[in-house]
Image (tube, one colour):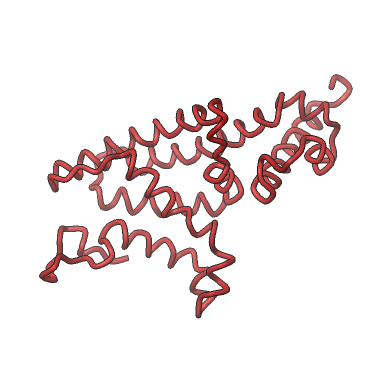
Length: 220
């Protein structure tokens, strides 16, 4: 690598990384070979190994890059003295926007679940622990203090994540079966719908038709 300038090295590393993100997301981690990756990135196989060590090492870097951004949004939007309603609303807006930009990395982070690889499982668990802790302190505990009902953060955190991410796994299908594909593809409508479901529920009322709590008055 000594004969390659620093700029060229950085460009090659980034090209390898972006090529891996695209291949892992569209073909799958297991189905992508290192030689194929090197050819697609227009680099030597030795260069891939030099920068990332292995395919699994490359996967870890992709996961870290994605989860750093996701956890940062949670810390910025959920931690603080604002009311729970406002924090959740802003968190959903920022997260869905982030997922849209990082669509391929999102697909990799959620769909690549090699449960037989304990190293990858623990790597993801390290990030999950951070998110669960934020969700517990900033959402579950305050909600329990207000309503008397405690939702396990290990349940709520993945449920919220998958709800916000679902669009990016199903959009091509939903656009074909929906009556109005332009509405199905609207990111603004998607965000507003998630906010309404999370903050109001589906019916927004109890069996008598009265509002359950202060979130029921929310307007998108």
